[in-house]
Image (cartoon, rainbow, N blue to C red; front, side, top):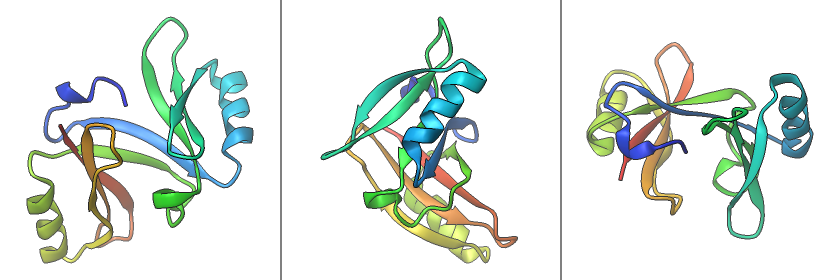
Length: 128
């Protein structure tokens, strides 16, 4: 993720895409958007961090493996929150669903994937 320690609650902290053909999509966005790729180790395989030319990370392209296996192939936004447990509890209390419970992928942050009452999916992100 970009400098996640500066993500303010309520801001969009990150965006990534999980798909079965992560390699093909990596090549697609390198060509179409001009993004550059760096590898992100995921324990047994690598996902991709995509960076703007001359700039820092802007997004990720993820393989549909491990904790990402159940995610739909959409551009997932990560909304920064101050308290992940309180936010997921509020989600449930307001008629939403928690699709992936709060967890840490080992990169210094925690996240959960939720579905709002309209059916839209996003992730909640708690900086380290």
